[in-house]
Image (spheres, rainbow, N blue to C red):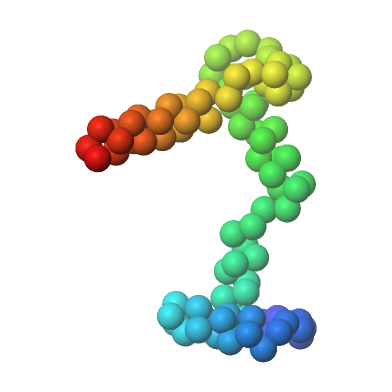
Length: 96
């Protein structure tokens, strides 16, 4: 089945950059752009994924947690990343 194609306009520098990236990956520019686009979620897709993730958490915990409660909850993962980064910085400072 033949897929309809279209043309997009970019600067020559961007085209050259995309061509190099595509070559490194064994793709043509069109395939590269399709792969890059597939990696990026739309706002609707992100919202759908967030809603699905929250539903899984509700089922696992067994509590009916509202979206507002989720929004106001602490950023546990963010706090873990922050603490890990502080430990790395501290260990680098101690090694200096």
